[in-house]
Length: 540
Image (cartoon, rainbow, N blue to C red; front, top):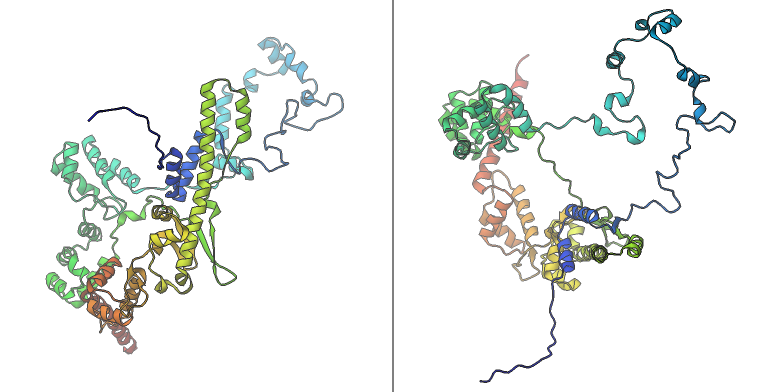
């Protein structure tokens, strides 16, 4: 077979991931906080980008323009009469007095008829400083260190810094230990404390990294566990409660047995606990009451990481025609503009090719960013509007009427790809008349109907299961099989394992555990009522 060379023309279409397209895709899946951070970085990087509200209103002069000039009198008013200029603010004859030769020290003392030591103090600066310290502050400027004007009033000047758990423990560490090695071990353990006040159960890795023995680490930990708040630096819940009980002088053998078997307390197995502790019903009830009054997370009383408030991206409000009005939250949309005037002025003055290329790229990037932000807002509004249209029953009647919905249904309705809808619904929130929900909340799996009718949403089925369990009586606890029968009677075809999965996802215990909890709660109510009745019937 002979090999030959030839020229061919071929036409084809392909999708190229340009940097601008990658940027638009990235912006779609950003939350409003991440988007604000991204835009702030672009504003610092690109000189042709500016905020839409940076410019002063039309017809208004800049704030700093025209306030002062070289001939202004900062201390008083102008005068048109001779001698009324700024230089005449001094007293008459002051210039002559300052320029006059005062003579020697003896001549000055003779003129003043006293010694200079009686007129001028030896340390004027030090005396003035002492007088200023002794004087009581009379203005906000002296108290808070800020300007007394209302425009500069800063409330944060009066707010103290928030004390964290680590800072609180570090202050106690500096007093508890004097040795450098013990302080280093203690500080390392304090750095391992989580926001609840616990340290890792296995301290072998800490000992290995510090080059200390396990016994030394245990000794330091024992001292840290005596710090405030009580129960801090514990390795588990039992140890945390034991530390607090020792602080209250209530850690006797019976209480120790109870703390070591918290799993039985969680299961409400009061009979087994009573046998292990060797006490009667009244004592075990009092001991359980003491356990409940303890703090299982002692570190939470101190400042922890700030929780960012969830800001909705979309608002849904009832319309006057009975429908729903969908609008974007304008506060979460960054407003940026391309400064074309600045670019046109620079293009006339720049002579170097490298500078021209830089500003041309900056103009192109700024234009693409503005378009991408606008396209992002339009896409979010389009997807949200379709979600509201598909889930109209939820907004009108509640979660029981939530319909099954997937990404493909919304994508086909608005003629977009599923991946685009998935990116739009990520980290976005919708404020409705029934609360604020993530957009992905409205996409739920479908569960077939028992009579062949319309499918049910998985979220609606979970809500139905919770309603059945909340309404059950202590004497008639519903098992998973009974819940399946009740759901099938409501035309919901579901398996028993699915009911168990939904129940565990909602953190609802099993039927055996629920029976113990409700019977125990009922017994406590009856015993309280009987004790109150006996006190009321006692003779006066």
